[in-house]
Image (cartoon, rainbow over all chains, first blue to last red; front, side, top):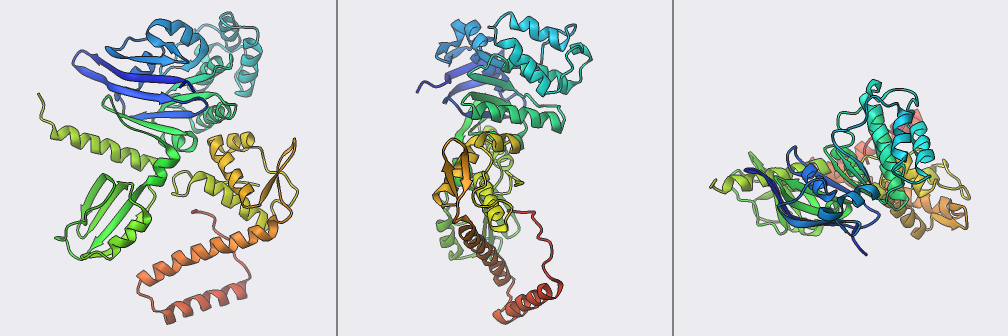
Length: 304
Length: 137
């Protein structure tokens, strides 16, 4: 199965600022793929390269089997894209912008746009410059979805929007996925991502630190709290990957990946260990652990 | 059937959906022969990935709670009521295990624990059933 998006060792810097470092990933068809990362982590850069709006320094990007560097225009025709900063013709009305955009697509575009606009409650005769932020976002989404693209690319689509509009966006994304289309979204709204993502990826300072199916990730990661008999006793050696480790008095709290619940029982019997408790962390907690671990690793490396 | 999904509470979303269907059947909110919402409908309703709904429904089919009705969708099976009541008892047992574990960790001895349980049972018998607080998994 050809991946819908394929990034191969993408690197990009803006002067001394590294935006992307050796980023590789594949998005299979029909999934909701969420890219998480702090502000400035490189998410928008990756998206712009994918869509042929920016050239990488090295590496390749392909969307729907087309090379982004050469066939960006064709890609942007076939993909539905809602950028982080909307650029809509302010002087047009909701109806006019639909009619105008329809000129670039087939006959099916305009009726579908009108259907979506009605569903979102958009006033047909209102000028875009007079619409609220949420309404404008919905215009952009309607324009992106009206030609039923195989891939929807959303760059922080709901940032700054109220809960109702965010909900409408989520429902649309879910609907697209149910219809077999692919959704690629970059987001800060981690709770929302947790509801709808099939695959999550975390970008930290230009580097991809995680790409995994969300259900697998949550099955593998645990937050374990050890209560020791005294503050000097060292934590037993834990199998698996330690994502975060904190100590308060006689307790250690560890975020660990790949430690089975059955293995935990063994540790309860270890010398110096009074109690072991385990819980499933939520995606926000896992995200923070990966980012903070990334920060620690950076601090260990001396600046050149 | 109303669902409430909390993606952050530690229980996988598909498991939350499956449990809530089981509770709904056991409690009579949905009866044998009645249809559950389609995957697409429910995913949209809950703003949740459709794969998780599909997985929940697959689980429920495997457990004999739901069956496919050709051309229409998934319906609650005839045997589902007894099945779901059993599953509900199993889930209550799991909750009880957690409570007992906590009690043990609080150093309550069996005698104290029994007294606690008996006094709560007596209180329910007197007041009739209270309202179940549905926060938490």
